[in-house]
Amino acid sequence: MNRKERAALVHEGLRRVIEKRTTELDHGDPFELLVATLLSAQCTDERVNTVTPALFRAFPDAASMSKAEPEQIFPFIRSISYPNNKSKHLAKMARQVMENFDGRIPETVQKLETLAGVGHKTAQVVAGIAFGVPTLAVDTHIFRVAHRIGLVTDAPTPLHVERQLKRLLPVDDWGEMHHLLILHGRYHCTARSPLCETCPIQFACKWYSQLAKLPGPVIGLNQKLGRYYCATRKHYFAEPDHISDRAGLEQLSCPKCGSMNVFDTRTGKTSRRIKDYRI
Image (cartoon, rainbow, N blue to C red):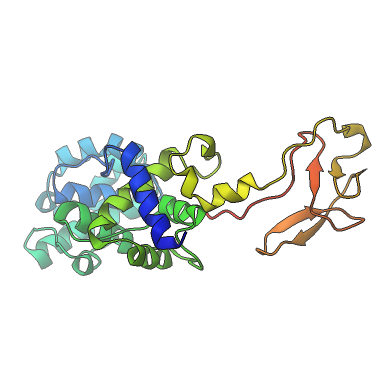
């Protein structure tokens, strides 16, 4: 299948199993969404949701926050990542909203990006959720999932991933796909222990198909004869060589024959790895 067909299958498959296709950041209006999204950089939504209730009681709108100094905001967000920088960004952002936008959160990505602490991803999230602007912000989950599934190629940055995904999907599906891929990456296609065996889009995943092609475990290996076993030459050895495969990924190899058909005698599992993608 081509990538556009794969994207359609992934969209349909995830829609069947993910009912709540929206942000998990608690908010009641565009101002609260902007603040929560800014705070969520390098931090979990769950953690942000523990600090925003008190923060919003103290500063319910841009007008009240614009009068605050960073030192007054800091105590409310001290438990999240980078509280010093974020408290400065919030104070300045609120003042900019009051001075440049008459106290209203700007509705376009371009105008949102003029605010302190608001990058391209944050601007897209706010514009898409609060104002219905067609956006597809790429975070670490989307970056990983899009690469694993095979929706993108030669996409080393989130911006590259964003551009390729937008070309694959109808504009009306951008926002929903953003939430679907995030939630799938957060709870199923996790960075370290993805739940591939129960994945609802396993049939469309390029990464899973590559994993399925790896050799199964070898039973009955003797650890006393060596840490590794070469299934090509059928012998044990202690120290492997390292070579790069066709994908440029470093693999263990047999020091005698150069074969990558190497197994760990402690587990019986292959040492072969499949290229993964994380930011």
